[in-house]
Amino acid sequence: MRLDFNSLLLLFLLALTIISPNGSTREIVVITSSIEHQETSNLIEKIIANKLNIPKTLINKKIIKNPCTPITESVIHICVDQEGTIQFPYRNTAILERSFQVFRNKNL
Image 1 (cartoon, rainbow, N blue to C red):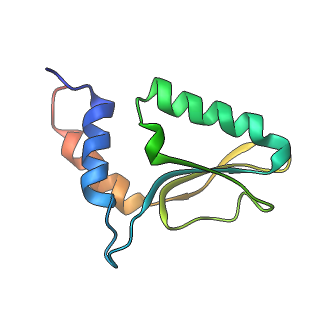
Image 2: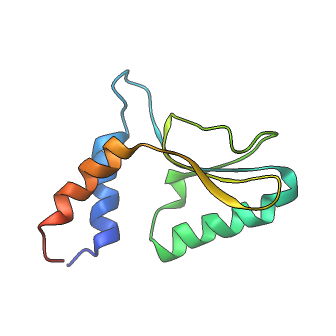
């Protein structure tokens, strides 16, 4: 069975990030929005789950008052701001860079 790039990346991300250095679990993908933009956050979750094959168990949606306040406990934080614009207030670049280094010289 041949795994595609997204599946391999996901497995590597899981290995690196499920347990953070202090021993607590880490959220992988966090999507936040206000109640007014909940439909947009649902669409983002659907795209990530269906097109990128990321399990919904790794995606955490939150409806909060200030959705674009960075959530640094995640690997990637996606928010829908008050105007409905999608932003990325936080990305753990160290984890993402280590993840992509594995695939840089591989032919997939």
